[in-house]
Length: 458
Ligand SMILES: *Cc1c(COP(=O)(O)O)cnc(C)c1O
Image (tube, rainbow, N blue to C red):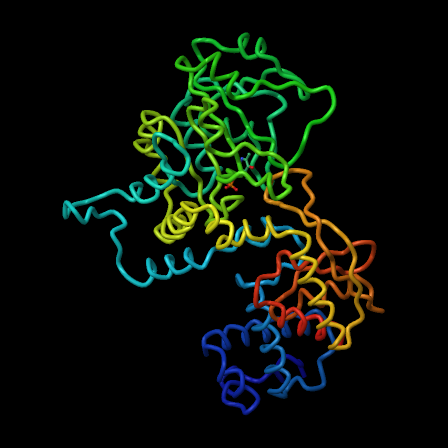
């Protein structure tokens, strides 16, 4: 007899006792879909000569396989994880967690209608672009501002508006890859402009720009080296120098990447120009991300000359890159916190994590280690470094105290088990040991972290 005929029918299985617990927690159609997949997989296996499992006719077999399939599916969805890597702007883990005020603003905008594109004073149509622009002007000194989907979109929009069908001049030392599929040469090309490279990888001089400028030039682009440094025999032409040379004749566009609003040098971070510095330096257009050092939602922010920003707003491409209302709500609330720098430093998680001193992080690490030890977990404290991440402050290391787990399991296996927990814990492996960096563990997550570690070691 063909063993496939022993596989029970869907209806019989669904009405069996074994399926009751599954149907109590998962939508019926999802259980049915998973069950059909499980049966199809078994049939395929049997057709290819696999041995029939002894319990092929038992509903319990199907309930177990369907349960596993549903749990796998659940894990594939977007979910919260505990970031114990110490990388503050971890692009793979969603970059910046939002401030409470930003989350509240998002919930409020999501729950009901809003004046997204409605002018309440005039009782007529308004523009979504009116929402964050006044705050951005106030905080950066820019003449005008525009918010789009992300910084990549902001740059495409800027170049397409200013240089479509014309040339964009960029130093060879700035033809960078940011990660994913973001490479400056390709972005320039996709924006409809032609790339003109000048200088060498390590050195570019004013004369290189002079020689490349022609009637065909649409813009001069300066790209912030967000995620690497060039050291040694180097030279570059700064934005103020470019502005002094070409200002008034050609737009100077600066892709700042991270976009720092506050100077953080007093917290031990290397000097980075703030957005206001870049604009004061003469950039006509600056682009930056909302979810890097700014600590807000994913967004692309364009700042600069009124006429140029207005042209970008009129560009039909702007509609394709437009920002949604939840982002605007979160960004506006985040920007409001910057009106008082002390409030921003306290309330914006990214800034709080970046500026937490060695003593604060060390205290939290000691506390975590003590609680883990009390729960029977062997661990030691070691000095280490957290990273800024997100293509910001390349090479900067924030002093931290790591909690090193002294387990007999291999580091790779412990790391895997931590990721398989609920909520998943993403840690780091240093010298073949799993280490936890509390800098990026959010307040209130410690209990779950300890339970997760205990569970992984059990
Ligand atoms: C991060 C970065 C980008 C891309 O920004 P997204 O907001 O991720 O699109 C572009 N340019 C620079 C210099 C960056 O650092």
